[in-house]
Amino acid sequence: LGFDNDMMKQPTREFSGGWRMRISLAQALFVKPDLLLLDEPTNHLDVFACTWLESFLQEWERTVVIVSHDRGFLNRVTTSTIFIHRKRLWYYGGSYDTFLKVRAERRKHSESIAKSQAKRTADLKSFVARFGHGH
Image (tube, rainbow, N blue to C red; front, side, top):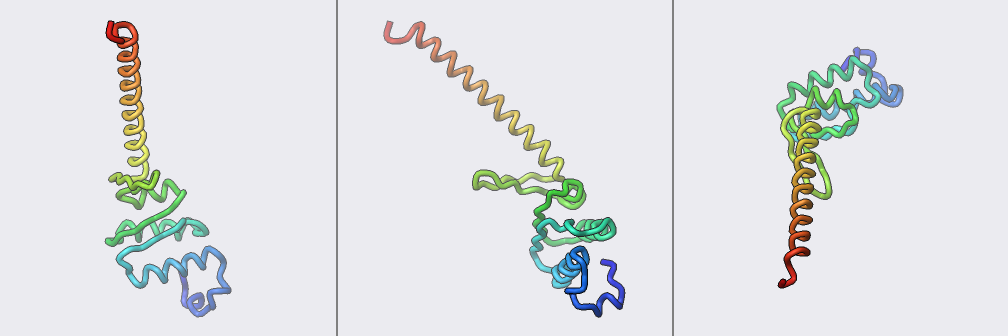
């Protein structure tokens, strides 16, 4: 993560926000957890640290849950996306962009079905209005 020997002797309070983020990452990664939760991991990191983290996560063989607004980062490190909507979880395989594409396609398909059903309902109501009511 770019720490030299002198830096490793310094107290944490002497580091900037970006270096403190690196310290936190080092602590989390050192214990090799079965599940790693990262909340906005690229915040406060410079390009070097972001690149290192991306490479590290691409090789990480354990589960990582990432909350991030950094779309490029997500595309480079994720292999699947879990979307939470209305208390339900939706699984999408692939990158973040794949998730967006598939979700848009599903939404378009659902809208098409709803439109078709609405037309069918209107046609049936029209038919009943013309020929129904026991006449």
